[in-house]
Amino acid sequence: MKFEKYHGLGNDFVVVSHEDVAGKDLSQLALTVCNRKTGIGADGFIVSSLRGEIPEMIFYNADGSYDTMCGNGFRCLCLYLKNNDLIKDRKFSIKTGAGVLDAEVVGEDPFLVKVALGRAEYIHPTIGEELIDREVEVEGRRFNLSAAFVGTPHAVVFSDDLSDEFIDKYGALINDLPYFPEGTSVNFCRVEGDNVIRIITWERGVGRTMACGTGSCASATIGKRLGKISGESIVVKHALGDLTIETGDEIYMTGGGVKVASGYFG
Image 1 (cartoon, rainbow, N blue to C red):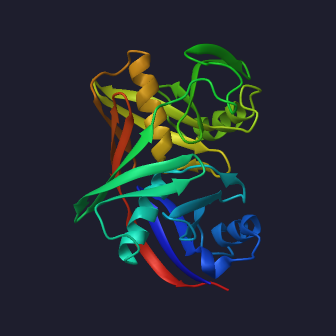
Image 2 (cartoon, helix red, strand yellow):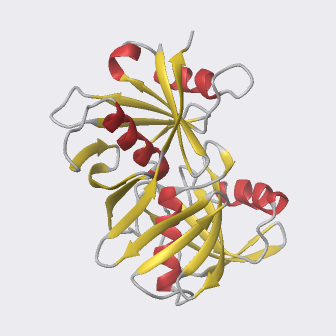
Image 3 (tube, helix red, strand yellow):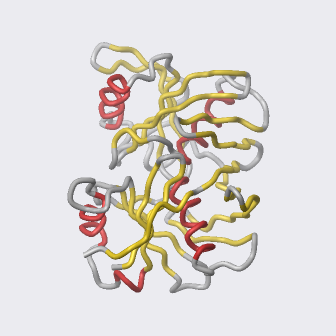
């Protein structure tokens, strides 16, 4: 199986073409490929399909679970398509499990792509009820919890504690709350300026990751709704760099992707 590996701010993915994995159990393949001890190692597994009129992204988490959308993975797929001459124009569309998304390459060196993600949904089947600044108690600790669906469900918590231990413990516990029937990624945010937040995400199906694109969109949108940040353009800081999130009538995410390696697996 031919593969290429990419990362978006340290959130890493193995990308393959649909024709190379046709007929295979994609869930099991994702579990095998993403294993960091016995596979290639990645947070997610992306199948690039050209069966329809436009490219399609089929996405699986490292634990083999299917997901509708991944922001960092989407940007990495854009670079994969560009590198393999599968898109010719600066503006193009890609089908995802969350619908068709429009994208535009806005930088070449470094590669930057701007993605239109639609609107945040606060009422959605993956979120049991509207959660905006709801006080909840988790193992004796109180949180103000918010949630939004931005291609995939996200919980958002503003906290000064962004330690690994805190995120690993409470990310898993919040994921298991009954508000989220299919689980949720959990974004822990700290305000660092009028239009600047830092987030660390505990992703469903993966655990703590170095960055999250859709989580950045959910966090910026909820941060503005709660009045914690302001401005149309929000800078979301991660360990290896920033994403720019525009939060007007529609959410736009601008960020890059980096090719890491290519080869054959199996």
